[in-house]
Image (cartoon, rainbow, N blue to C red; front, top):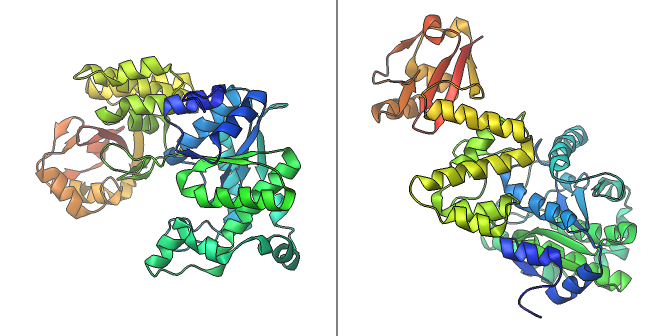
Length: 412
């Protein structure tokens, strides 16, 4: 096959850095040229929101649709009841049906920002529609017989767990069979011939391809994206404060914008290619800037990514708040708000930080102050016993932790 694929989708995702592996790149390229192709990515409903770690594959689906194909977001209403054991050290907590439904609703709002679900557009499906009604004995006889336990044990996602002598329940062991069944079911129902996902899903994807070939004698494909880490080795989307959520009720647009503004210099060009739709040449130009100019590239990155998720107005408001906070020393209208009950005041500044969760503990608060990292209304704090009362809080007290984290404290 030529170094550059002929289909728009593969050419774009390879150029922008999305491709980790593919089961048959040549055959998939030919199918995409004939097009359109239907492809899916599965999402188990384990939380009320998707997070930045999911954003790479959401952008992959967006490019898939923009190049004339039909993406499917498959909600794991059925598989969430089992839990994906891939590369986990323990079993996922099992969720009830009400929580699963609520989580799916929250996730759906995010997808709607990136994909067009109108007539003939993307599909949002739920594997509970076919998994919940399965007859166990029929399923074992018709589907289970196609799976070799020896081969299942050889997959890295399972093998790594067993090598560490960590328990793998029979419930979890069934997960890869259910996911394989999803692929076959989607082919039969919607003509879906491609499953995409992170590279940690390679074994599950291959299982689905094998099952579909064995039972239906048709060719389907798998494609994976790299598991991203930042240049300093952190898992993408993880921070000291936890996951970077995509739902504005769980993480404000300003905090989301700030996450991208704080990107490490070395990651700017790569993230522009993956998380924005700017031309590749422009991404390379911005990523190659240095000194103070790279900060302008980070603002561009933050604005582009925030606009896609929250809209242009939210991005502009976040940038304005950041400029007021950092350049002019003001409070900014979009700062994250934390509260403390008026009855709890006055308290020492150490107690204040710990009680409101601004720091994880009083010990961490004392260390922050000792290192000169705390400011209240832009004034440095050096005394850990300093008292904060209602008058100090007033209509709102700006709390700055280090150079990049700023919050607004209010009494209730």
